[in-house]
Image (cartoon, rainbow, N blue to C red; front, side):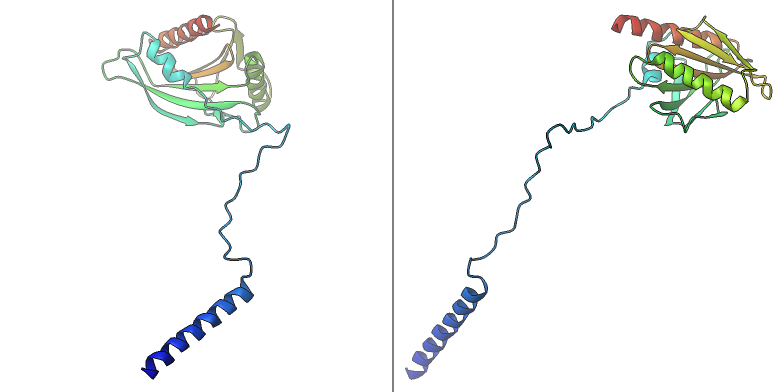
Length: 208
């Protein structure tokens, strides 16, 4: 019986010691984990918008007369034009390179590279001018650049003396600029390009 009483007394003493130790070290009680409170945006600070650029080449192809004769094999971000001009220093312009390949049963159609340059809204002419000036800068002059108003709002052909079998057309339509690189030997390819330009022009008119 004495052993039981002694055991109870020991337990009470241990409990008092634990309580005393806790009271000395944590007088304010157990600290709860702090939950971070999201900061409210500072007045006058505008959060940047997430911009999603549309796939203009694919959507235009799907509405064209050649939707079942071409497919977009590859679409990538690019810092060059016509595999010749470096656009890495060009500000406020996003460039996409689209590789279009003809279907096996397509007649007279060849592979087309479509460069899609999307600049600031309402500044399509400025984007076209910046691309043209970049070409002239790298060429060291305007030789080989022939401007024409026949395609889109503004357009030019670039003739590469080192590769006379390839043709290069740059055209501005609305806010966007398209660059087409194609083979001159595929007689129907340019017909596709003209239809592509017409379809995109009509989409600009219908959305305006």
